Length: 441
Image 1: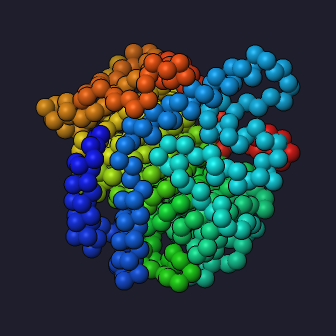
Image 2: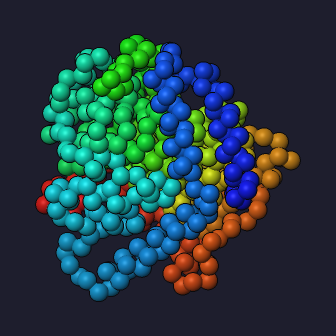
């Protein structure tokens, strides 16, 4: 929902009060909340309140403006530069770094490129490089130096890269500490046939250019989540990436398919999130943004879903939203089997410049699905602007029109009203990239 300043303050206060009473009941995969985890939970939610933007419409308009400027620059380049190695980056995030043939020497430039609600995320930019040399995952208590599990639990900022291509089969969920970047450029890194990634009570994390597939539920047990803490975990859900009560998170150029539960879940008061340039295939429940109708702290959830490709074999939840503000911009949707975008509990969903291609099934043409009575959902702000609908697809709008903070009459902003035919170009390189050192990626 769109917030006024006074209403926003009241909602945030209620969220804070509600969260304090909820902590003992909201367990995720935690078998027991000890003092360490209680402190982490409180600190994380306080950080999320600070990360919440009281003017989400402005953030959405700024991204629209950046897309327009990128397309103008691309057209000028095509018209005036006939170079053989001209950069093929097509959206404002990719344009920021992919054109540099020395990207492998300037990896941390990536931290300047995030757009949308996660725009403050820098990951491990302020830390040293950590090179993963060992794909094993054998010890949940004392992870071996050189493994991904050892890297992500360290207390300091780290920019994590990989010595070679590898398949990492996680024995248990991989639980992150704050201020980390996982950067799989230059090699092929697959997280597969085991547990997924868990970002719980953390901030400032970038997940970039890896492949996550065939994620399974794992039994739990004692798992180290920090150098100075180990905790008892219950059975994991089998999510590809689970973001739980965390903020300033950027997931970019990740290929995801075939999980046990969701491919990406963002829940429990998480906010300041951007999910961009990802490719999703062959899965049922793709992306959950807000887990429960009674989790009112998700009112502060703000997520940008941009430049992603929702491809073959997907059924539903692209995304499925609750409570918060969700900007779904310039994504490409192809032949969902139930619906594409859904929600409950009065979320605000702004859909702009997407391409929706329905399947031939006459019963799945509608993009949207609401879980509420019509008298209620008619009040929710679900708006479509500049979307392209193919093969009978349609978006059922509701609620007030989009409030623009940047004048739509300015020439450089006119792009926002152009059809989603741009979505194919903007998402052309979605998913994990095959980057080669010494060449633009």
